[in-house]
Image (cartoon, rainbow, N blue to C red; front, side, top):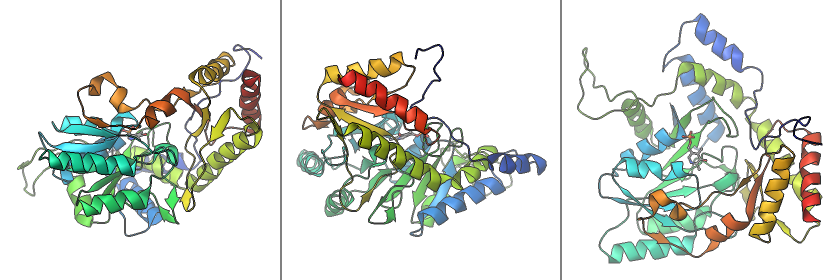
Length: 377
Ligand SMILES: *Cc1c(COP(=O)(O)O)cnc(C)c1O
């Protein structure tokens, strides 16, 4: 097979269920072509029902915007420090900088690849000893695998530091049956094009506190005070979700569970066909952890092998990608403090994300597996 006649296999592409266009058409027919309307309210209520646990959801224009507002709701401001998982997408950390605050990066642990409780506590104690208590903790469920919920929240409450749960990659994941997105003081979701469901672009803020939802919507719609004219006593943002994209989201909520099932099927398929090799390792779910397997990832035995597999896949028109490059390695965050144990650096060197879309067919998965088997020889 060569690049010209083989179909491109993407890492994670949008997967429409079929009813999205009905919601969008209805928005056109009723002229709700605005950043408010029945689809926005309906999408919020669909997510609230899905997440349970008294969730209140504000639909926004992106997950990044949701994180920005979450930090504002927690009072993060110029000169503050915010602890943030180092191994993540830059969007977990960027909004900290928008506010003139400083991210303090914390390394990962091996069981979930997420923020390490030991390093987190070391960082908190060190910062307190230096006279500056961090304002918040951004913890991430990377690739859909929940972080060490109990250990992290125990530390957070012991030191009374609020947690922002970055659940952008983990809609459909859970811990002991409780949905990710409901553990943090605030949580965020993303509906970007490559996520488990997409609105083409969008995000949400989740909180048990209805006041958080109301305040987020107020800030997301330019912080307009209650007056007949435009009156402002606070700086606002234009972060509300459009009623058109929310229509896509309502259709996508109908297929979320089947997307999770398909992504988990991808992971099981890769594992079944590749676990014979001592050179490839899979991240297992610890007891009580349930991952949506947003991306299926493998750990190889060396940087060279990882690159060999990645380039062999590229040669066959198959997209794959190294794991997230830790934020403490990024030039843009070079002057930020970091509490490290070497684990995220090591994972970045040896790890690879495989094609993981819920729309992959069995033939696609066989193609991926056969290229990897050849590269292993
Ligand atoms: C996608 C993502 C975000 C940002 O969401 P957008 O909707 O793309 O702004 C934040 N954090 C993580 C971990 C993500 O993967």
